Length: 389
Image 1: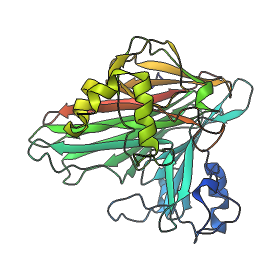
Image 2: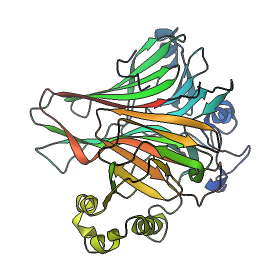
Image 3: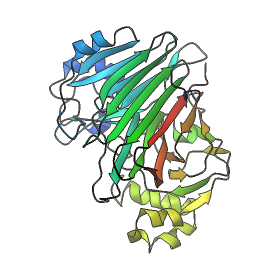
């Protein structure tokens, strides 16, 4: 069991569709996709999230090697679905080799289970599936000798599984980096009332190693207007554009100035009136300058997330709570090792219980990177605690 774990999908696919089916009609629970995938496997393959070729996954080996720990494996479109399940009803699902956690079903006080993560699938340019949302790692690394060359981990290898279905299950993934001098461990721990995502990094380079990025979690809600963040009062924040990641789920036109980007800038000007005058002449000076100009202090302890926001908190508490009045449940979000917390809301101008009914939270190193000295080791993580038992 992890020593730091005390903090501790909705996607839609029509029954029948073609390559011309609008992406807006594609939204189905991930478990249903697994059950039905053989029906349309050829027309809708899972994405190959790896940036370089990787060895095919040996499912027979996985079943034999890790049998008895409460984890089962299934092949879906060439990728591997690892399902972690505890006897109390807690279930988490992860995709390999990407490491994307697509589902976390938590038992509730009323005896049923509720999906806490929000994951969506849409059709890509070439008819492939693009899976976004859930819990993902979004980091890049580089050494001080070459600021122009960076590396981002994409292919994760299953290294070990500990625990059992009675108490807790811990899955350990590893990645050695491009030259073998950056050691990464990604440890996912499922407990009776918590899902932990922990990252351990070791630097075997002779020079310092810089890491920037975040652990991003998309939490499903009835609507952002019915959702509140509790515990962020008096925390300083910096307004930032929505994070860039292959897994982040953004409303339509998020990459176009006339779309979500324009709406986001307009929303920021309303929330922080000084943003417009300070920032209009400084956009070309980079994101660091933007973060210095666009800042404020959180004045609400019970913050309604109806506005479209993208904020990085620099001194937030180690944990805060998200309450969804529509679904009558809450999630406590905790962190360890990271100094920054990210909070994104698509705003209330969306349909309830829809593809974009979610809140994105992240534990981040964006404004200030994490620096590892030679032979140094760093650990950090995020914990989604279910207080509804």
